[in-house]
Length: 433
Ligand code: S3P
Image (cartoon, rainbow, N blue to C red; front, top):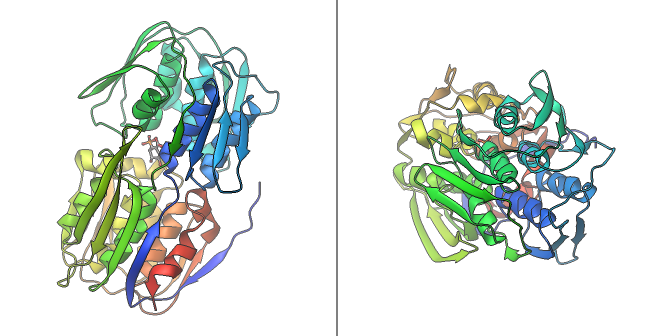
């Protein structure tokens, strides 16, 4: 699908005030959608992600035989294929979504048939060797195109493996677990840094047995999944833009309801607290083992402090780093990011684009191969921002623009819809001008 490039003007704000309920978490929606489509029976979801990425997952699973119904109230019903997909002659289009491509490859590697997975220009540049290696160890046959998509998966009967991920990646972990789900014996994934654990929690919710230690996950296959009903928690990575926006204005007050607070995703709240933001978490509850709560944030009157993000924290915060870097100039002590080389192989080279766009707004910034230093105490001016087709860059610089002087033009604003189509409307709702 071709979408025309859109521009969006962001004017400075005086404050950020209000209360929001955000659409469902992208990572959880991918998993619920994919597992429901593979399970037996009809699953029902409310607050399913409205992003184009999760629509790609649903469309691929529909092409493989699942039945998808979008209800008028926004709910999604998925009737699964009970463990056996139907191969299609048409390629499966994963759009911009790395999660769809990597996780679905694992699911399909253990199925009968031949499947071709394609993606847009950005996804076709992203590294796929990381899934080929473990899947081939399991006996799957995968053909890549110079290490990238298009991918052809030739389904086979697999053997269980014990795999240590060289780069922390929840997508690779999930890919192996979904192959392991269908494979005789115990498949184990070991990871040095614990990545988001939505797959483990979702697999359990759909009836699978999974074993976990501090640094490993094991699944004994084959196992069948059953349908569930679930409300998807609000997306904390989408909330990051609003939390950072609120943190910029002394006197701000923002409430985010029914937000996903899974500990493997909530490191941002610690960083916000380190920066001096005042936070409260209320009404914590568990839904299918996912923590959900209400978050209140207000900015420190003395301004934001400083933060250094490296090691395991950099991996856990990988999706939130662009917006943290983008507010760096407005802190007192700056934001320093290291050990985040993975940012270079996301939907764009996020280090290069953050550096380029911060400089366009007049900031001083130092680029490193695995991160950047954004000194604090800098004033920014409005500029033309190149989102580079990357949703998180478009949104991160819309937040930076709220405290700049003059207007900022976001080029490629339509990319926000990859994860968060409501972003600009909600930003208008809470930005006090
Ligand atoms: C995701 C995992 C992360 C993240 C991506 C979503 C997931 O990628 O950056 O936005 O849902 O599993 P990696 O697993 O490649 O680190």
